[in-house]
Image 1 (spheres, helix red, strand yellow):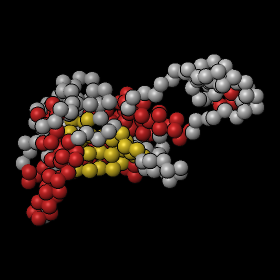
Image 2 (image 1 turned 90 degrees about the vertical axis):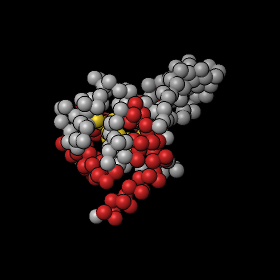
Image 3 (image 1 turned 180 degrees about the horizontal axis):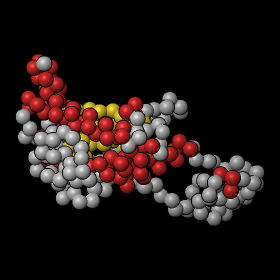
Image 4 (image 1 turned 45 degrees about the vertical axis):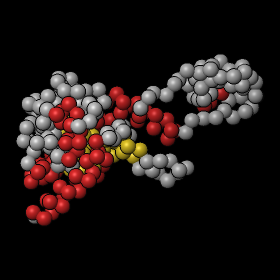
Length: 239
């Protein structure tokens, strides 16, 4: 999620300063949306302009990076896309997460909902977890209830449920996170569960534009996938 460089450094007779718009470079060797300016003359040449979709992708990446700062008041190192719950709790309220050290969950969701509302093609994905010491027999059910609570909160903040996807991981991801060096591992080692927020954007089928999911999914998810399948099978067998 490194920010793109805005410094110029073009060739020839360009000014080296990025212009305000594509129009600024028309009819001469002036600046354009492309860093580095013109190449010395070139009257009447059409300057290359940035694709608006690419500019939106840059804005999305920069916005997600700013949202990853830990929530104020949190005593654990979990990132800012993590929503905490009380121990054995499934509801979100003003106290949610205070026992676990992952605080400010409702404020966190307000920030993510506001961000998603500015980008109409974005969806929010909620990955819900319980702590790694939770009883396996109820872990997946509790995770589903936590995911549903987050979805309802996002809906109350004006983000349609049609734009929210929920996945429940039981204790598989937190057990894997506890053995990892990821910042969320601190919360897992403290016995906490959480819900994790990601933004996604499907490929639009234009120009081979790839789908997008941010922030980058932590390495503990692939490690947890096989165990999650086992939890789901166990839940299905038990009705």
